[in-house]
Length: 164
View 1 (cartoon, rainbow, N blue to C red):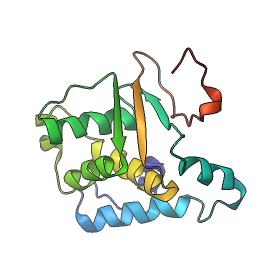
View 2: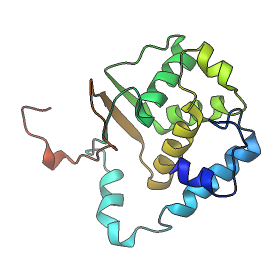
View 3: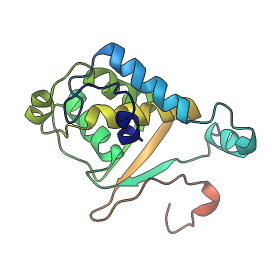
């Protein structure tokens, strides 16, 4: 989705990764992402109910090149002073928002110096917008050693005793 948004009237400027992104550009990008999300989810009422249940576990999978990996690694860098990508981590929506907010206005050198991917801002902007829109309170990240996925929503019914 960020690539599609960039192909339109650019919200991010001419740089390859769009960094640095001003607060105005960040607001514009979030607005463009929200425009692509359904304004209401009537046909997905079960999803809203599930996402707001304390029994729901929202698991996300990805390697270090996924939006989840970029955001987890940035959260570690911003709050713990290390850029080590964990094999698993739990991030709240507020944690993801912190990464998004701290990435605004930062240039490529800033991300490189911290050992972070230059797509950290766009990844955290997309993840923060989707989590806010769907009211996802937290995600549980599991790193894939190889391969990549778009992410997975997992309901307790899909788990067996062996995977808990």
